[in-house]
Image 1: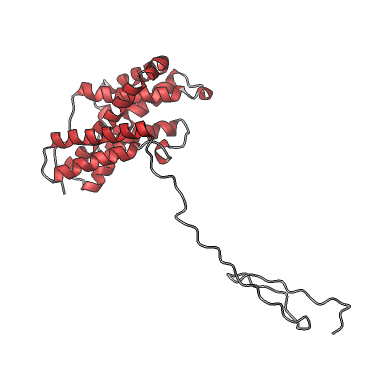
Image 2: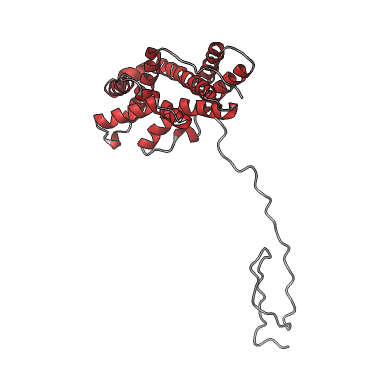
Amino acid sequence: MSTTAALTIPLWGDLVAVGIGSLQGAMFASGFRDRRLDLLGVAIIGVATGVGGGLLRDLFLNVTPVALQSNWYLPATVVSALLGMLLVRLFRRLDPLITFLDALTIGLFGAIGASKALSLGLPEVPAIFVGVVAAVGGSILRDVLLSLPIALMHVGSLYAVAAGAGTVVLVVLIDLGVPLSIAAILCVVVTLIIRLLAVRFGWSLPEQRELGRLPRVRWPRLARRPAETHVDERTDTGAIPRYRIDKPDADTDV
């Protein structure tokens, strides 16, 4: 079992990360004009998107959520969400930059979540799971609040895969004795590269398909019994196919 100190980043860095998440959540929600969201609705979605991953992470780890331990997190997410809604056209012009910062925050949240789980004594595989949840939890809460299918579960860019690859790298490097700071940097870099390449080239996991259809069984036709033979019309209802036997016509000589 790997144990290590939890990765910590400056408060301003964490606020920037949750702010980017809130900004994207508000921009996403503003595209649904038919929902007629008011300022409060946008603020709630922004807060959920920005701090949702950290909230789920801390709930899994049974600790007090970090966002509730400071006066700065909630105001930062609300302000970012409102800016995202009011200046949506401006930020969409900066979409490449927002995409880069978003991929960066995914890596940071994944590294923080996985290292925090390891520091609390969780085994490697659960620590990776917690790291991925921390990275993508905000988008899950966003979709739930908007009553949308969870985007994470449908064909699209490799969002969770990028976070999973990064956290796997972090956990493996820590098991090999690499310092946490170096492992965290490599985790962020791997996540960033996979996410940006997936956006650039449209990479995604294969869509769900049937692995293969069983060949259709064609049962041989059974020869009809002689007309003069009495046949019970009752038929069985199992795997054996049913056959209908015609009775002889009344005017036929027998």
